Structures are given as C-alpha cells and as structure tokens.
Image (tube, rainbow over all chains, first blue to last red; front, side, top):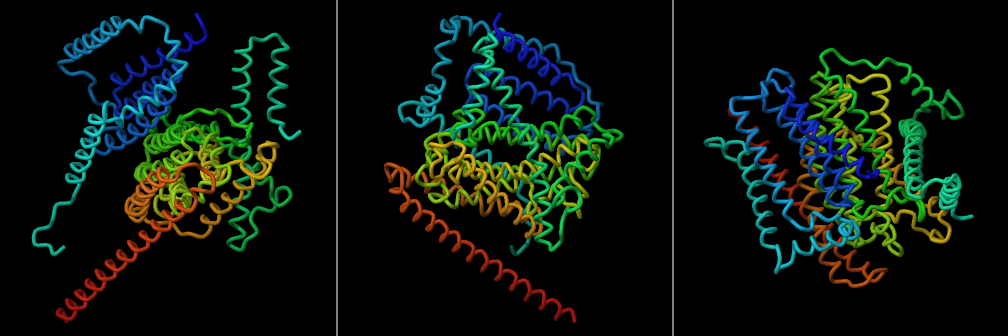
Length: 176
Length: 397
C-alpha cells in the first residue's frame, strides 16, 4: 500500500463519517456543517487525482453555497438551533432501499466501463489538457454549446423567478 | 548572491538527501517546512502591521498612538498578545461548543491559505497551481463560513445579526470581485498567479484596466469588512458583531485574521494588477524583486489604512446598492470591453495599451453620465416629495 492509498482511505473514512452525520445529526446547523466536511473531503480526493480545477470549484461552489443554505435554514425554519427534530419518518426503510439501489446501480455501471479498470496514470499526466478541452467544448458549436446555453437560460429564469417572488406587493392605488 | 531563496532550498534539499532520505519524501518535507515558514512569517508580520496601523491612525487623528512599550511603542502588540494569551477562553452558556471553537481556526486558515499561491519573487512562491485565481476565491469563502459559524454558535443575538450582515455583504461583493478577477486572467491568458505576474512584464494590468483594479480593491476591502464596510462589527449598532462572545486567544485569532487579511488585500492587488515582483533588474536578482514587491505592497497597505482613518461607515442598504447598482454592472461592462479589445489587439507589450485605455475612458465616461442621470432623478424625486409635503402641511394648517 502506497502513501497515496493511505491518504485516500483516510479521506474516504472522513467523507463517509461526514455523510452519515449529515443525515443523523439532530441539529440542522450541525447537519449542514457535516455536509461541508463531506464535500471538502470530495475536494481533497479531486486534489489527489490532480484535478485541481474540479477541487477548487468544489470548494468555491459548495462551501459558499452551503453557508448561504445555513442562513436560509436558520431564518426559515422553526427551532433550527434546537435538537428536537426527529431524524426519521415512516418511510426511512424505503428511502434506504432507494439509496442502496442507486448506489449499486452506479457501481455496476462503472464496473462495466473498461477504462476504469486500468490505473489512471495517463489521466494524471494531462489533467490540464482535459480542462482546456472541456472549456473549448462548452463553447464549440459542434459540441455542447446548446446544453451550456440552455443551462444558463434556466439559471436566468430561476433568478427572475426569485426576484418576482421577493418583490414587495404593489400597493393598491399607490402613485409610484 | 541575488537569489538566496533557491540557495536555501537547494541547501536544505542537499542536507536531507545527504541524510539518505528518499527524494519524494525530501520534497514532501520541504513543502511542509515552506508552508510552516510562510504561515509563521505571515502571522508574525501581523504584530508589525497592527502596530503600524495603530500608529498611522493615531497620526491621522492627531494623536501619538502606542509609545510606551519599546522604541516608538513597537512592542505594544507583543504585550497585548501576551495579555490575550493569558486570558481565559470563555465559552458562553448555551453555545455550540465545538462549532464555537472551530470558527476562529477556519477564519485564520482562510487568510493564511491565500499566501500559499502568491509569488513574492521570481523564485519565491509557495505553490504554482494553474487555477490560482479560482483558489483565491474558494479559500476566501472558507473565511465567510468561519464567520457564519462564529455568529451562529455564540448563542447571542448581536453575534447572529453580525453574521447575517456579513453574509449579505460578502455575497454582494463576491460578485464584482470574481468578475474583476476574470480580467487579469484574460489579459495574461492564464489563471496561475505566477503566469499573471510574468505577463505584466512591460505593462502592469492596472494601466490596461484601471477600472478592474479599482473594483477589485474596493470589493476586497468590503470582503474583509474594513472600515467603510465594517457593518459586521459596527460597535455603535451591534456591539462587536460576530465575535462578541469570544475572549482570550480565540478572540486574538479573529483579530489577527482581520489585520492580516487587510495586508493580504494589498499583497493580492499588487500581484494581480501592480506587476507583483516586476521591476528593473528583478529577473536577474530575485531578491530585488522581493524588495519591489514589499514596496508596492506597503504603498497599497498605507492606502487601506488611510481609507480606514478617513471614511465613515456606510449603511447596510447603501453598501448593498453600491455593490449591485454600481460595481457589478461596471465590472460586467469592463469584462465585456476587455474581452473585445483583447481580441482586437494582437500581441502584447505597449502596443495594446492605447485601445485598452480608450475602452476604460469610454467606460468611465458612461459611468459618470449614468451617475448624473441618477442624481438628477433623485433630486427631482426629493423636490417633488418636498413640494407635496409642503402642500399637505399648508392644507393641514
């Protein structure tokens, strides 16, 4: 076992613990913080894979986004800081079953991809090249510019919707 | 002689290899030593910058400032920290103990982490990752998280208010800041900070895009919460904001992080817009580059203190409207202008300066026209409402 594998296993244990605590912590804020720990572990795995772009984006998007999530959660929910919420409801068995099925489905799907059986040494060498290719593909007419633009239109629609909802109701008979 | 940094690194490497260590292990050890040295220097520097800031602000306000401990009061901060260290770290009743204790660590970590990618001299940089600019953004957001955690876990209404204000403000100002970070990236053609500094060889980016440099400077001041934007710890409104419940060394950490962050803004602005270590003879003698870097940083840091000593605090609605109504549209326009002009002018060096400058002048002109129109509409509105007020009072009497 190499040093890299030991580090990988350590990070994986942290991710799993973080994920478990996210769903089992009775305190909403703690759950969000554990989620951040799990996502930071994923970023560390990206670093191990030399995918520094993905790692940095992971931290920027998720940690920023989740600190907002905490604020919204605290402002909108009752007893957010308390430990009174129940962790399970009636359909926990069903949910566990669904999660298990999705996980095993992904696992069996990945095990059929032939490249993944090999060691990813060639990927490590040229991760920067792949990122450049990804960037070009996103704005290339022949490749994926349409999904890219559709995604941005979707985000724009979401933003307009949010502004519309947050707008104060117009006063009846007001002059402004 | 001119390059002590490589000399020291080579000496240490030879020493460790001489002990019969594995080359890979040697590199790992050197990286750890480098990280420890950088963090220690950064944190020790804070002793000096805190003294400098207090002294300068005292001068601005026609006082003497610290002048009892050591020559010119130089050891005042050391004494203050000795005091902070000996104080008890109190955890308030009903606080979220573990979150409360982790929060200051995260805040300090986010500031020191910024230093990891800054090239201080041609041969002196922590890590040259190719996504350096994005790294700055993501590490900065960890600090926001730390402040959030401090505010939420303190079990104090004022701390909570401070944390909410912080998040509202940091969100607003992250947008123009990230947009302006795109401009040096575009001009240099790379996200790595070392490449960005190298690309500023004849022309600094502040000449090519003064608007971007200005917006970056302002919005990173807001990100730290320096005085015109220090809503999160507005003493007259919410006592001390998010760190109201902290005492002893955990308060000291917030304190250090804040002052170090102010200095780090100067460091980053120099790196991104003012040519980093570039200067005459810096390529041949890296130590000269380091000196240039320090001089530029000192000048920008002085301006930060100057702003702190001069400007009063803004209101929360003004702060957010400055960001959303002025800085964000301006940054967007600057990004579009820079992208188009950068495509139009091939090559680099002085050849592309006139077009870029013309673009900046047009943008500044448009901004001024927009300000004028806005001011006129405000004036008209206030005149109108003043008239109607007068009419109602006449009618009432």
